[in-house]
Image (tube, rainbow over all chains, first blue to last red; front, side, top):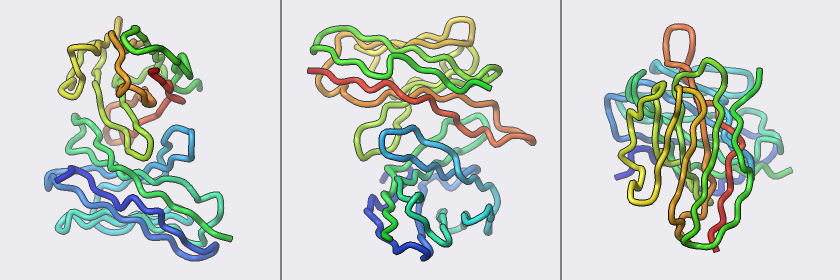
Length: 111
Length: 117
């Protein structure tokens, strides 16, 4: 079992709709959770982080964390063509630990 | 503020040749990471430094890969000899220690794309 798992996609969503990206992790002791966006040929950049159970909203993005189910999700409202990218879920066990990435979900927003 | 700087951006070598990648992290970031990313995959950690100390190098293939971070600032990743399967993007990232006022997020450089022929 991979430590961080994501569906590879591609996930195709019409412009203006909600895109939902999911991630599960295996280490129940994980504390910090990150979503990175990576455009083709570019490096990953952080878009959201979450530590506590529940929802965290930032503009069109909402991160959701359920530690009991070991599940993290990212919702993108009012999807735009510029949201087309690969979204990487990343997990850290503690402040002194390494960050482990999933394999990413490729998102395509169709006009 | 300058970001993480990596060089070279692209490198093409023949198998069995050596290659080296250089990384200059964001000023003040004590943690430095080298990741390897294959096409369609997420970054995989090779080595993590806290200042000068390599605190996690369990995924570094030590028979051919080596890394150093002199004076706790710049870092170099070396492969000798390179194999066909080493073709990938080598990403350097830096961060502050996660704490009350910061997330400990990773800031990535633009990466060094290696092609081994």
